[in-house]
Picture 1 (cartoon, rainbow, N blue to C red):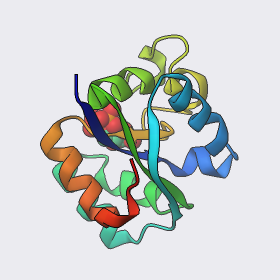
Picture 2: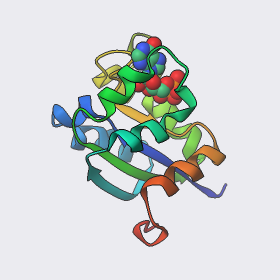
Picture 3: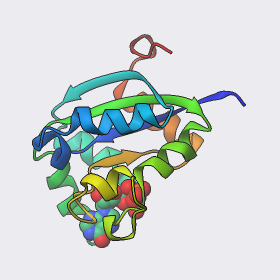
Picture 4: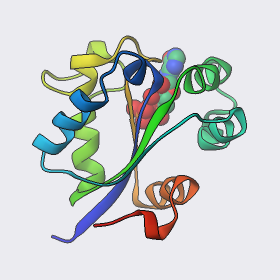
Length: 140
Ligand code: IDP
């Protein structure tokens, strides 16, 4: 199977607790390669654009405030079946429902402050990667 790329964010709750390396260890052990990575402070406009699909949800304001509350680490991950594989490694959105050994089971604080983002489909992965990385910043 061909390698597939997905977009990942290590969210503010994780960076604030110095868990970037711990999260990356789970990612790498799962066979995904980090082919681009940078630590940034998201602007409100960037967070609103990124989570635009959730604009009408009751938690949208809270989610945007959270995403700009501390730096995040944005990443491109690559692996076989990379999008689905990373969703598996992340675990369920609500850590209470996440499987043992997943990033969210290990580290997430709540359904909102849940440590990581991963793209849910090829078209969104492409859009999300392009929002944060230029082509020459990704080295596979
Ligand atoms: P996902 O991140 O597992 O794909 P989505 O349903 O797409 O989950 O939600 C996007 C993000 O919005 C979640 O990761 C979480 O940070 C936040 N979120 C989802 N549901 C809630 C909620 O009920 N309260 C607060 N934040 C939420």
